[in-house]
Image (cartoon, rainbow, N blue to C red; front, side, top):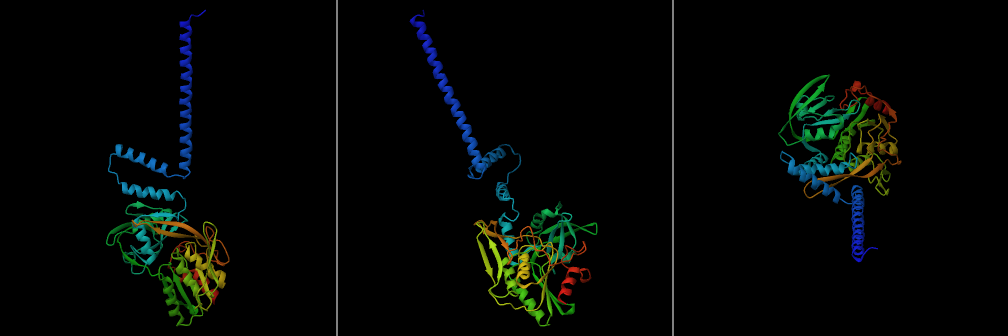
Length: 403
């Protein structure tokens, strides 16, 4: 038999063991709870329900960079790029964060002027290059000899592909009086130009009388005042009593929808539907013509693969409401509208806020406007703004349709 002292010793050991087990259970429970909490919290953060995760992660990265990185840190630029990257995560190329400089540039272009070199550019999707589709009359580019059809390979020594069109365009713009160096390809030969950036005033509308007494109006973009330019151009043509009118929307990348609708009102009967838009809640809004038309002669409309946004809206309106023949190739297919918000520091946010449909409720986004009469140009001319008449099979077809 064990004496009292031995039993007491065993009791103490047993008690310690029990306490140790309890402590271990508590610790394990705490550890499991901690990791479960971290997992749930991170999942919550990563799902976008709380921006604390992003803030914490950026703070950790900043601390590491400040402690280890051997060069100077431009934190302002990093913050701008971080915001840009956050918005780019939407995976919508039309929804963008705009820096102060980019916001200023957007406002200038919308107003119809900007500082740059004076060319119209497009992404030549056939070979993923940036092609000059037109040179603005009187611009510095015209003065140095840039031509429609030139392929822009490099800007300031950096090579750009067609899908990098926006980035290349940003670099071509800049402070008035500064130089930009570009390398172009023309007829398989490389040429280099140094061009001084200058203030460019965009004339969005041009017009002339063609053979067979046909009027011709080309709209290159929809900026502030484009509708007034269009009406003035038509009134001047009207003095020569045209028997028909060709409206050329080829290579028109869009712009202000309001200006596009004002042009439509010159041809569409008052009270008819011009545009149907739908927001995030699929709530539709119908815009109708508020004016009596002033154009009452036959019209044909030219489009191509670079006809986009506001110009597609106009083509769809004229097809659905006026039964005008659309001639050329299927348009680009940008059927969404962006709303621009500005911040107090001058930066901005461009958000895809609505999808639009033609008066007959036809979808445009990622579909485009299909021509009634498909006519293709030879490959050397298909992305050029000013095609010689003898090579412009689409314009010839439009005039023949009116005849």
